[in-house]
Image (cartoon, rainbow, N blue to C red; front, top):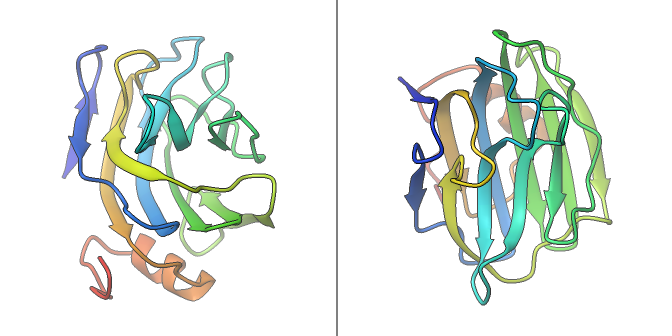
Length: 167
């Protein structure tokens, strides 16, 4: 099942991740290019109102990247409006690995990168009021551990959760 987001108030929030190791994955689709910042998901900082980590677009609206609170971004996909993409961010304290593509069987991998790190994660949200996504998010899964490349590809290929350890 997918959640359709098409307004600044369309967000889904939750408890998030409490440690500095996590894997966040989902499928997403941009329905309308807002030609502005659009976040698929945000991991909020536990001590401030700012980002700890996020996956979203730059000002173009279709150039997506993973970034931290200092907006140190990794290269991500430039998406085509209306096309579904899968992505996974593996956050491992001082490193971040980004997986993305249109199929779990042919993922582009960036990292591990030491420019992006998490230190004090708090709440989690899909989209956000300021930089909302005009599109869809499906099959969102969050683990409190770092999945390896094989686990990422396997989990993105199915709606069923294959490994419930630290889910």
